[in-house]
Length: 220
Image (cartoon, rainbow, N blue to C red; front, side, top):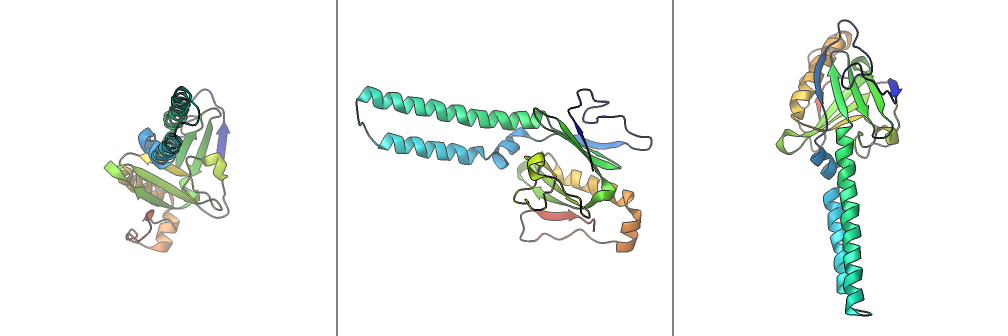
């Protein structure tokens, strides 16, 4: 796995260098920021928590003067709104600075707000993938690395599958029409790994299970 830090000039959007001969872009996309905000930054849960805190403060009643009571409540409300707004802004900025690219040879993830990191994930180094569909066809596509390849969860976040801390999985978060992207990935992986496909034989896609993150790409 290769990583390129802080490149200021791209040969093409999302690509730090020109594609080699024979490699072509199959798909490019960025996270839907609203999905990122709700699914990764949990802005709805945070909003509920802040409202509960304000309600508890309001229910405490007047302990000094009415003016001080309303002033304190107003200050708390403004601070809560600012905190929630910063969280939404962070989600928007994360989506704006992210670009996912699928070629017939690899998956490229340009991520990072302050320090840009470009991850090159060759299809031959991927062992599997799983899709988590959501509303309106927007969902997550998580990638399982083959062998002993590992990546730091903190380096990937928020582009990492939730709760996979021991073996972090790079994830394309909030992708529109995620099922179509998963099919493109599966087709590209099969072409890039003919020896593995031949040894496995033709296998159907995994059927849905009780896991919310359902395997959809056979790569192992």
